[in-house]
Length: 554
Ligand SMILES: [Zn+2]
Ligand SMILES: [Zn+2]
Image (cartoon, rainbow, N blue to C red; front, side):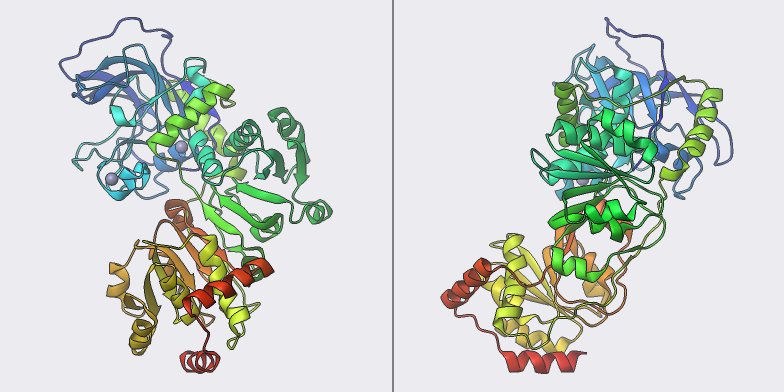
């Protein structure tokens, strides 16, 4: 839910609640709703449920207006349910708790973000990534777990939410400026943590909108050296005030040239069309490029960047409940809040705020369309490469991404060196090939399973099942279909370089948080380590055979 919240609705005058309530019947609630994609907001009367034993009943004080609210109100994602009460950046005060609730007491300051329930039993839920649960109940324009009861969001005065999906807001944070932390905050905080941004990280933030300014604040608080990269010189002062140490104008070719190879981590918050390839040039060897916006048109990423820089190109979408709480605690400790403008929660003001958000911020509009990564042919690997080349090329990424016991590893194309290394490292190796005829060879090399990549049914069954995939094929092939096979946060490493563009839909980057990377040979130290490993495990490379196979398969 990449977003640029710019307004916060003041839903009540009340600042302090000292006494709890004890509702035993459904609670009459007032919200602001739209009836269709084209209708204006109006006052809407509905009921919140009586708190069940695991529920918390909250009086809502503030709710952020997120860009994704606007898209859903206008049904731009084609999933809208009406009447719709939007709002998923909610802060308020606890007024009643169910009998099993332990984390919260009456009077606590709390927040509710993009989701209000999930199964809590699937792998995603168990790993604290409730937002990736197949059954997630989103805060509005969604249904409860019963798949029937509609959910209504935070443009309202009360909400009843399962304890697990409520966060504590530290008391030193104002409830109004803390509201957008529940969406824009966690969307930027989560990838910074995942990629270990900290002291001495040279971090770039592309775009200084709603998401960008949060990324700067978090980066600065984590001790990173933050540079803001913006199309407009006019944002320089804002960047400096937020704590950025440097500023780059992305339209100035000379400035970009001077900054090449200088960033360890870049977070790209821009949803408008922009030159991603030029930005990727800015990061250093093995740098991380994380997209939290989703530009509408294809981004071009030359394959030589993947091969030579070994970058990690990835994406991110909000965060789980555990991390959201961690983020709020971090904000409390560092006194981080969002820049906001408050309005009254009445239909007229919401209507105006929507128009203004769209007009003033149209550059950062979040467009949920697929984009395509274009990877032109550049450096095909030598098909007959000897051990010193093919060997280290496959060994190195396996080591870098900690392939080992229990790793579910896929090898696309019968990259026989990759299979040998994977097996020797203890991984469960599956060979993925266009041709059933390779099955015997794969088994002989030690692979435990075999997938025919042209068999849609086999692919379907194998979706989300690999921790690590090494793609050794230089012939044209469907990379998007292969990336579907990755589990959440899986690694996809390309060591071949197909001649035509590979299509990588942005939803994969946002929802799977994959690591898409490439690799090309290794350092001398690692090459020696690889040779020692080969000696220990009696691994050799059969040059003639590799050459034959390549000819047959292309
Ligand atoms: Zn949002
Ligand atoms: Zn689940």
